[in-house]
Length: 326
Ligand SMILES: NC(=O)c1ccc[n+]([C@@H]2O[C@H](COP(=O)([O-])OP(=O)(O)OC[C@H]3O[C@@H](n4cnc5c(N)ncnc54)[C@H](OP(=O)(O)O)[C@@H]3O)[C@@H](O)[C@H]2O)c1
Image (tube, rainbow, N blue to C red; front, side):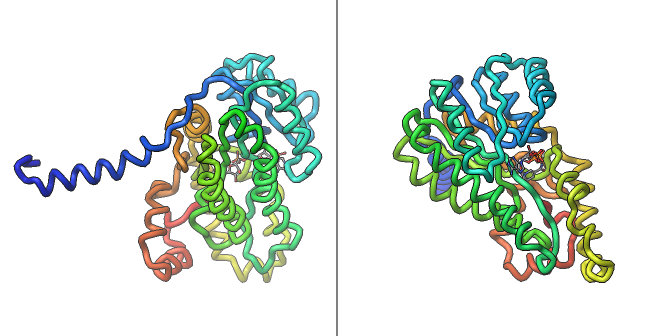
């Protein structure tokens, strides 16, 4: 650029201020020790993050649903083999939808008598089914696990997080910004998290508490098999009902196949984001780890914002390849 052109120079200055100032304005104490509670650590994103944080010196309370003695042993063994001190990994049982068990998880965190460095909401369920076939119980369960339980856990943790200037990190999804056909429930639960976390982030700023969302694209985990193969509600549909949405199911299976095939390893994607959100002086409000079928997560979100909604409707309804993954 020719520096003699002051307009361009000023423009460059304004752009760089616009890009860097928001980051520099909001700094938090760097964290390298303390206690962390993380939910849903049987597999995938939660398991990798729990071990990754433990291996970095944090004391981690990791929750599993009804773990057997063997599950606990296997988890400890995996943790130790990946650099985590066995004494720094506390594995407890908690179904996040159960208020008593949530409180027990918080009690386990408090009983450590350490600084509370973070509470990480990771437990989640996915479901992809045309809305007219969604049962009320299934709908309530997705909202309960993905939205209500994390918010209630945060509410319970806030006094300790404020006391210690710790952090809140919640695993959402790209579906929290983009809503694909068949994902009314899942997208609703993840959109709700996004709005609630925007409010919380602003609310807790004056207390020196950082609040981040980690919104993965495709990350290797158990979620695809759990939601689509094992308990796939579409498998229970009659032939007629299935035929009505055959195009949708075909596209869904294709996208999920791609997602599974090209999914990022959690250690190299979501865990990097979660560790950054917990430890860094400049945690981001949102992270987009993982892979997407064609476009990056950031690009998808930008397109969602920039394109007229009716164009997006056509794109998703016509099922243009790569327009959406969740
Ligand atoms: N993997 C991806 O590509 C992807 C993409 C977008 C968003 N996400 C989000 O990432 C988070 C982690 O999912 P993941 O992909 O790692 O899948 P995952 O391997 O299935 O892990 C989900 C975890 O949540 C637990 N869970 C489910 N319901 C629970 C409940 N009621 N109480 C306690 N724990 C419960 C599961 O326990 P069980 O083993 O007992 O079921 C499991 O440990 C979820 O919030 C998900 O929505 C993942």
